[in-house]
Amino acid sequence: MVNNKKRTITITSGKGGVGKSSIVSNMAYILGANNSSTYIFDADLSLGNIDIMFGMVPKYNIMDFLEGRKTIGEIIMEGPCGIRIIPGSSGISELSNLSMREKNMLYNSFQELPNCDFFLIDTSAGISSNVIYFNSISEKVFVVITPDPASITDSYAVIKVLSKKTGREDFGIIVNMVKDEGEAIEVFKKILSVTDRFLNVYLDFVGFIPLDRNIGIATKKQRLWVEAYPDAASTKELIKICHKVAG
Image 1: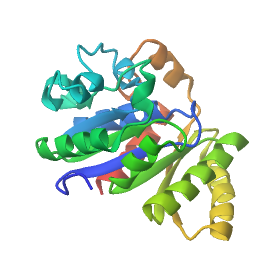
Image 2 (image 1 turned 90 degrees about the vertical axis):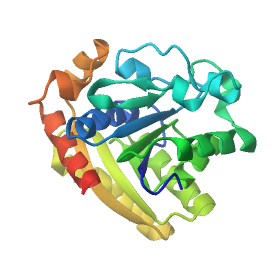
Image 3 (image 1 turned 120 degrees about the vertical axis):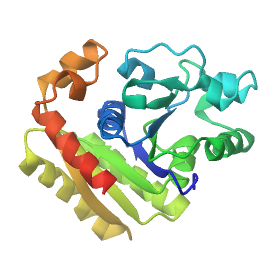
Image 4 (image 1 turned 180 degrees about the horizontal axis):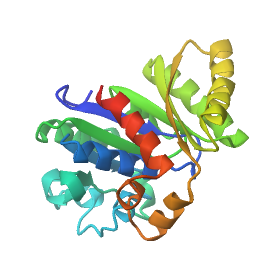
């Protein structure tokens, strides 16, 4: 695992479009605003978008590090509340399947970073070798799902593969894009009923994010919704999730 003085959390999903990167970015803001030193690693290396969430344009990215042009420290951007962002790249297909040498380069560089409270890893969706690797080096894994049946099915597939490939037995579930907590619990029960039947894993309901038009408005403006709309229902629920994470 990444340096044990860092609380390393990977946020992953079965399918794209479930709001994973948005949750990671806003979670980092909440943690940073509460004086927790926080890094985000955009591990969707070929289609990275964490920088977009913050309305930032990286001068360098992970490709510059892997090809030896820059150190890991030289590509890091500083966001609001002291958040440190390690940007992925965009449109470079070869980064979607890192070699073991490249994975070791990243792992070793993470060990050399200054100690921090939280190291958040935002993976790509699905079950690529990159996704499996980045989940394997984390202390905790959160899977983001929505009520979409395809999201539930694909999330089960991710949990199954990660359990088999990494030996992980515990997964946190964040349910996004639901009407209320009742619907979130129903979605959680659906995936729980399948994992209880076929897998030897433990699922923890970490929390939910309700459907909120403010999220879409903030995202279009390249702003974090928790900063733009601190009193929104979505912000309040993500704060609850962050309290669990910090606890």
